Length: 284
Image (tube, rainbow, N blue to C red):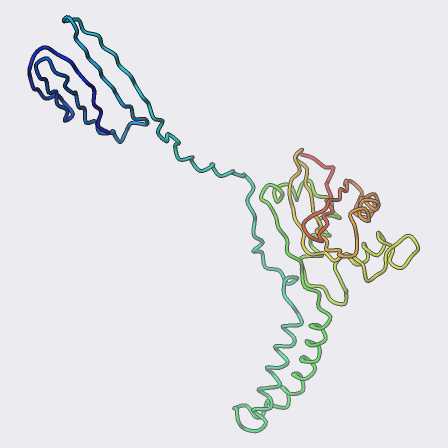
């Protein structure tokens, strides 16, 4: 923004100054000082300078007036640093027969034998001399496979943290280990995981119990370490017809059934999920 200031002088001259300004003087007349300032890109504020000079009787009276305008000095806020956690999730890649569905195996083998047996019997496929044997064994295998598939109870997901895995062998009680192994494998003939335990704890159909249709369903389990360094197995249930109070008043029964050597805690999760924490009292 150009800035101008009146000047009175007894001499006559014309000169230039840095920044593009000029000084024009006329004898015994008023003249002006013009300063063309350009704002710097690195400056956070800009100022206007008014310069007035009057020279009566050859004495200089100088007056400087600064008018400042605040510039936007807000710096872009840096992104918050991500919160680091020393917990890493461990994937269970160990192969065991308990993780295999026998219903899928039986049904697949039976259907394969039946299909090839019929093809060989009608001379569509080679091996007609073996067609009778394939049909004889294929039919019962397919029936058994369908029955196992119908009665199959799939394993629940298991979320394991690395620090909990290191404590499992030394700090987890035998019952906690058995509970974990039972719910992460295929089961047959059971309506739900931990059916016997939930039946005793919630007392289905009894006066102080709950209706069987309102029974909680196990959705997943989680292995973690508490703040005081204890191994904890968390059972996550879905119970749309129950309240947190229904779990809290049975907290002692959870500790008794899955004990000894543990402490039970209950809490509310998201939506209709409830958590039962089975904390081992064994420490390193």
